[in-house]
Image (spheres, rainbow, N blue to C red):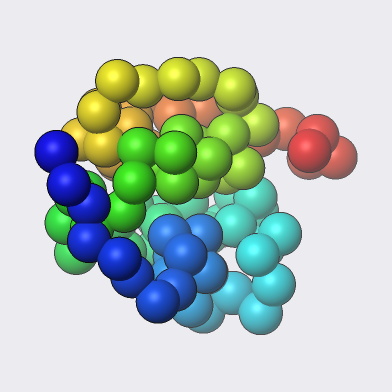
Length: 88
C-alpha cells in the first residue's frame, strides 16, 4: 500500500491538534482524550507504518510493532495504557 507524503510528521500533527506546546506534552495524561479526538480525524494511510509505530512508542512508551497503520491507530484510539509519569 502506498502512503501519501505529508509535510508534517504524525507526532507534530497530533501535538498541534491537541494544543501541545512541545511534543513531550503528548505524554501527559490530560492530553489522552485530545489525542484520541485528533486521531479520529486522520486517515491512517496518510502516514507510513513506521510513523504510526513510532507514534505508538512515543506516546505510550511501549515498543510495539503493528502490521498495518489501521492497527496502530486502533490501538491508540481504543487500547493504550498511559505512560507512567517520568517514563520516556
